[in-house]
Length: 353
Image (cartoon, rainbow, N blue to C red; front, side, top):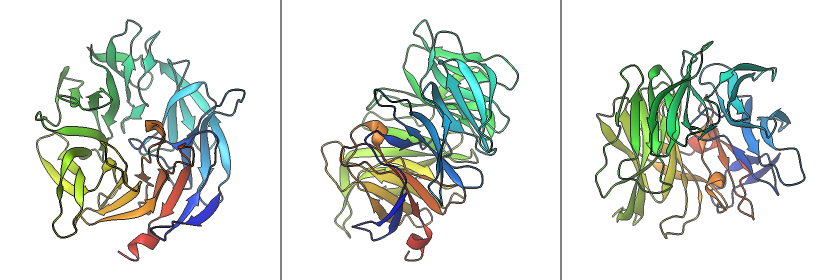
């Protein structure tokens, strides 16, 4: 671990990893920290000839790193409320991981011959859910209740991804039609009990919706609404191309919570008062990439950390809050574009807010 001062924002930042391989935080759609915020988790890329890939735990204060799983496991994610992780081995074997002792316990199997398309997610009842590519090449949503066999609850020809069970309602699973770009209708919600799916945010032809995440209490979602043309803020002269919109649980009401330049992946603090997002060059527009903090009550937006440019989507900054909401974990791509994990303490930012 090293500490450095951001050359643009002036804030102190801790960097925990270095290459040549990618070291990337967990995806922003799941918790990245232990329940006490003492540790965060990240994935280390395994390079040819090495056997050190897998999921790792890092001590926020000391930088000490401990391996949690090896490279044969996929889909690692942490529980919203309990100090437990969930992961898959050999595509179908599901394990829970005690994040205090690292003890792994087998808890069931996903459908034979398929593979997960994202990470596992958990509701507060213990139900797990994921998007899945079945052996017959059909895409599906799969649930697994504690002590029971996995069940397929929805199947489709569309490529499914970003599946996220509602943290406080095991009956609702959010998912997307994955096109790796724009989609006619990207966001969907599955009602498990009723056995139907419906659009979540109903898109118009000119809209580009992407990168969605539940709030920790399951009451709402943050979504990025991209505007390639953008609009110019007359006061500041900035061209805003990224809009963070917040929708209620049922997808009936949406508000614009923030507007800024080139935003992409949004995240909500657990208290609901703050948002963060990464600022990335895309759609032909080049910017200084980095991490943006938003005060939700006012919509005030501030660049708090600058980063290198991402080589791939896996190297995006993907910022997310710790559970207390006073730190943000993010990827800072190195000179080769590979993600390296960093933390910024928000107390220094809010002191100048």
